[in-house]
Length: 231
Image (cartoon, rainbow, N blue to C red):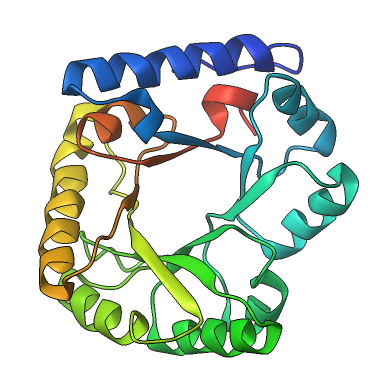
């Protein structure tokens, strides 16, 4: 897969955008329906600024503390998503600082986000993380528990459940991730029908498989290495 060195972020960004557009064309989708979340875990603010110069401001971070430090360094402008798992005791720091929290996987965490959002007088957008493969090393709720959690969280006043997120098992070829991405899309569609409300976001696909994810309906792709190189 393509990588970027410290001086190649701009060309890498163009390449990733072209590949997203190509995947959209193959699937008959409008590229505007896919947002690139540039995952900057371990990369310093200087590298992020190169991406901002390109006009791209949607940044993803795995850890709250690292994100907060970069928010302070970069100032206003970037839009931040939390793409890693959120510990319940960090909800206070996360609520209101991120446009979207990708990895909610428990009633306890959802209720803590609700409590913190209510205290701040805002609504916090989030996604439910589904562990479709039931891997014990991954966060996420099992497929048969997604709808009950959605039903509970969509009933809360200060959270806005926008859709689902998943991380498939490691594979040697991107195509082997397709069943997991298609499975998340079907699960989202079933849940939206049961809830009687849209769940527009599907966060799925990373550097090694994002084109397949786009072909299967991803609206958010979380990409780090293809933009910034190896960590």
